[in-house]
Image 1 (cartoon, rainbow, N blue to C red):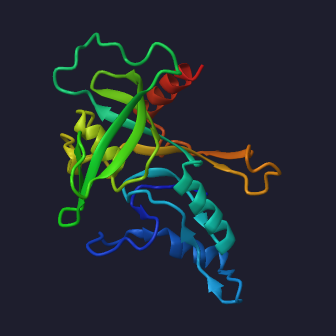
Image 2 (cartoon, helix red, strand yellow):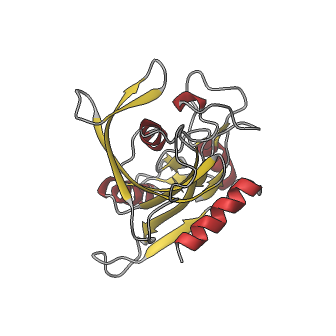
Length: 241
């Protein structure tokens, strides 16, 4: 597990990637060396999941094939717990006195959309109802605080679709700061977007009781210390008691 920075790719950034994008799988492989398959052949460091290049935070990799198989199962079966922090623009017309979130930390709102990815624009589009080739996409969110121009949104990602959080939040008017692709008004100073994979909890593969496993949780510090992230941290701490 590492704390990914904006501008780093989980694996090869692919066609059209900007010059200078860091390939984390290759970099970690060079640092840690290769693992081994059952037949003795080399096994390279592999990303277990995806974080978009401009997104920061918890990024999980596997160096051994049995670990990758176990972690892939955790993500496929939904036992991996993924929490994100998003700083979003206050929607136009949002009342200045509007309550900033639920009355207690246990209250969340669920979003369900059908997402369809357009490879020509590298963008996902969200529909409220089922569409051909659309993938059902689910997340839960709550607004834990707000500033004058921004809302502080905590997200639990249930499914894992291409640009899911970015597309779903934008569909309800919550455009992530700096995310021009999904409608933000201005870019983020220094690049990137204000979407941070705050924590990732996975079952411990060595738990004696696999029906009730222990969890290993990692929390990623925010990518930079500034007043906006500091305000988010304070609001989240208050919301979480």
